[in-house]
Structure formats: C-alpha cells, structure tokens
Length: 393
Image 1 (cartoon, rainbow, N blue to C red):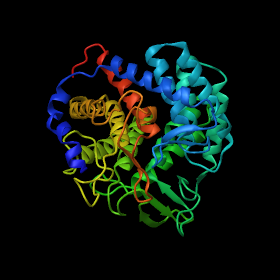
Image 2: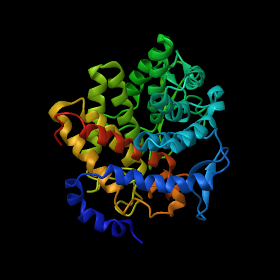
Image 3: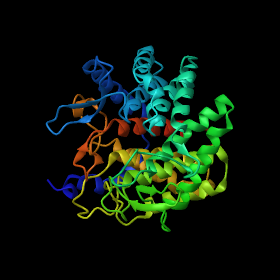
C-alpha cells in the first residue's frame, strides 16, 4: 500500500490533532501496558529490545550495541511518571545490564548507552552507585577525542576514511557536560565546546541542514562530506537533522552561548519550513528521498525533534511559540493510530513506522527502541511545560 494512502486520514485530521491537548497520563498508561509485556518477553538482560526483524520476530541486541541504554532509560521515564516501584526496579536492572560498557573505548555512543539509563536513574533516585559508572564511561568516551582533529571520532573507519564524524555525535556531549560538572574536570567541557564548534563549522550547509558524515584528515582538514544512512551525500537525512537540533539546544542550555541557540534555531527553521515536511510534521526518512510521497516516514526523527523543540521553545521568547506548536503537533501525530501501536502488537514497542538505515536495508518501517525513548521524554517535557506557572500555549 502506498504511504501517501496510509497516512491520508492523518493528514486530513492534522489540524484537529494540533488543537487538542495531549493526555499524557493516558499515553503513559498505554506505554506501561506495552512495556510490561516487553519485560515479560525479555527475561534475559543480555538481549536488549531493539526493533523487529523482517520476519516479524523481535530484534534484540547485545549491550555493546549503540542503542542498549534506551530501554533502561524508557523504564526510568515510566518510573518518573508513575512513581511505581516496579518500574524503578526494572529500570535499575536494565541499567546495570549495560554497566560494563563503561570501559568500552571502541564507540562514541556512550552517551546513549550510559547517560540515558544511569543519568536518568541518578536524577530520579540519587543512587550513588551510578556516578562512578558514568564517570568511567565519560573517560572512555574522551579517549576518542584527538586534539589535532578537534572532534570526537565516531566510527573507527568508513570506506577509505580513518576519522569519520557523524552528526549523531552531538548527542553524546550532554553526557560529557554532566561529567565535567560532577568531577570538576574542565577537560570534558572543553571537549564538548571544541567538538560542537568544529561540527558547526564543517557539518552544516548554508540553509541549516547537515551532512551525515564528515571525514577528516589527521590534521583536522576535511577529507570528504558524505552520507551513510541518508539518501545521498547532499541530502538531509531526517534523523540527522533531529540529532543536530537536539544537540545544539543542549549546547545552549549548558553554556548559554547565543551562537548555539542561533544554530539550533536555524536547524529548527530548516526542519519545520521544508516543503517536503508532511502536514502531520512527521518527516520522511530523508527530506530529499527520491520517491516522496511514496517514502517511509521516520517516527524516531519526529520524536527526537519534538523533544528538542519543546526545550528550544523555552529559550526563545515569543519566537519559541511556533517551535512549541510544532512539537505538540508532532506528539499528537505520534499518539494517533497512524503511528502508535495497538496493545500487545508491534513486538510491544509503543511507536510504529521508524527507519534505521534504509540504504543498508536495515530497520525499514519498523519500531525502534529510541523512538519510544524520545517519545516518552517529549511527553514528560510537554507535561512539565504545561504545569509551569503562567504557561500559555
């Protein structure tokens, strides 16, 4: 069935969706029912829920996979909303299941892997067992920073290039900011700023869109600007745009340097004003995918962007209202039957219709664990904003 037909009803109703408030309690009640089933179907904490295989079976991954921290992080969000001890216990169990990755120096994704579960866990419980794990992980992550290049190395190699850096790497800086504040080691913070500044210098086009991968020479000069998961080297891979939006919003939060706020706004404006962004605000997997409108949507990109836009809206005064309104519309869309699973289906994930790596024919039009994580995070941010004194939608 064509995607334009599948989503036609949602597109027609998108205006109505944007006008009604989101029932956060209801959304978390559904999420809890799904994740109770997820926990029951995953007794082995060495097999982390990730997605769905082409044959419909659950796709589970090891703790060394970059997404291993999202399940524990989502369980912490369920505990944050419900205050039920069973979620705290489950979140602790699945957080500790990834603890050994604190020593992993072979990946740049330790922010996702460690800070999503342990950072949320420490924020909510002050369990003193968590900070040492995170600080060791931050040291491991910092070994991937080469001062001569001025960026944290992402993958060890891509094609003939030995120093690839992906836009996703902006998401690991929040972890290093936490480590700097907690340890008093300014080096972690300095790495964040240098990485963000060089990413801003080399990763972005004049219109605010970003390349997926920049490959560097040993002296820090650019060897190539390419894609890995996007439609083409010069295309705007949707989730990559969302990673950048979120990352520079965090950079402004942590430094209050206006250049990062301006960068986040530029990315947001590109994203929200793109002619290929559908009416329901959930993007195609790439803004320049060749067969739009008959291309898959990426709910994960929508969830990440919604969470980022909600925070960004709080830093930009009156200019933030469109960001807030767009985020609400994204959440309304994700909470609708077009993207949200039926109870007990979808291998017990919350959201449908995400895309991991279409060029690699991997995780295309499936649930993804990080789509659920950022959806729950965005719901919590939405609820917190609405509860602020003097809030105006």
